Length: 304
Image (cartoon, rainbow, N blue to C red; front, side):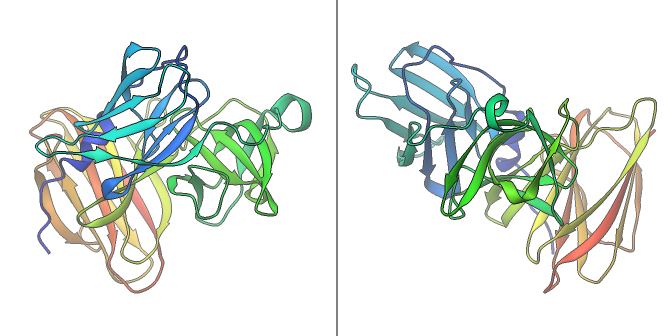
């Protein structure tokens, strides 16, 4: 299967962080067309599908968040009522998003009073991080087992305890039965924001080599029909090595250049890649599970 260029969906990875801590707009979660979720936390940070968005403040009642070339106008009336979240993609008329939650309807339990400052993720595979404390809320990220996260407060909902957690890159809600008490600081592996494009759903993870090393290795798993994107920075002229060791059939991968063009078209897991790069920036290795069942695998990266 021939894969098309990675953009525009990969542009979400480049969204820059901004904070509007002095905003008079309450925290909210909004669901927008094409499967996009916009969240505004109590500190005034805006995230689009779990990734930080850039924010421009016009006044205390009107902001514009931008991610992936899409602008999201956010506004309220002078008294704080009438919250509206717009959706303005380039080249189309846009519209409005649906507000699914607004404000703190229940008080959070502060970490210092009744809970630890940090949790460790304890789950088989990856833990779903959701936009609200509900099993039906949108998944905004996935955390690998062993990740240390900050506890931002817990509450009861739907007969279980949900905790608002952050790994420093993404934040959201997770069921407490998959979290165990831990000591900080927050450490990698990082959260993997969940995104969608025409090809389906995928997760994204920034690859970080250990200090002084020129490579690293991950063990992971994927549900059928889902892909995972590994992002690693490299320079023009360097050599990239990649190997996908699958524990079953149906695993393939594609490598993309920083400009979104295809460096290596879809390749079976039994073929490793070694080649010289001709662009500088974030290269993406996307691993696909085309089988009918969940597959586990190892990936090995090297940059020389």
